[in-house]
Image 1 (tube, rainbow, N blue to C red):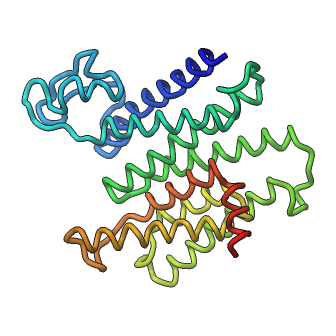
Image 2: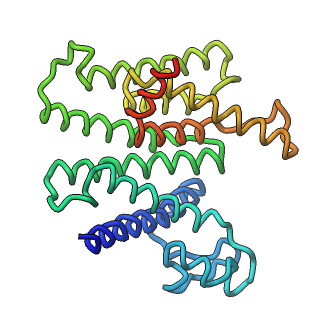
Length: 273
């Protein structure tokens, strides 16, 4: 049994690392509007990478973090994203119970696919906004549609009335309106100075993702993380209080925290407040 669990864990991590490798290409080439079908190459000299240089996480260390041709230093972004997405996919395996279970039902498969897609898109938002200060509409739309489809699937598995606040569909719709509406109000009042239009759009998706019960603690965690990071950047870098800092990464970190630990965090929040 231990061997089977280990093999499943390695599988989930490996798949996540592979998708992390694709995610790096997806974000960078997407911003440059390049085709995703081309072979991987060095960003500096365009040298095509060998097969072992394309191995997620390990490939970076095989070449010692430098291009084998031009010898320029490669960004640590590549192995870091691959490793982090591997860990997140591994966490999904445990969250859905697939790694620890012998059975694999249709609903398990749907859960795994859904959470993997959501995590992939969230990390894409994190990386895109962090590097290029923009949240592409296509990612937000893909995330919103994916979550809506999953909610429809879940609705047919569980009998509940959409007119009841206890129904998860109603909870999620209200969550979408609350988070999206709150961000829209901030955007309108400040005329785009406090928050960007991309943050408003992603707010509707993330609200749908977490549900109205988690809205306040979700926003609280988001702004606490943002404040801590801002203080660190101001004190340990050349950034000032008026420097522009992308808000999307904080939303993504908070979303991932609630995606995996929502019930525990809600219980903790009720205990403290």
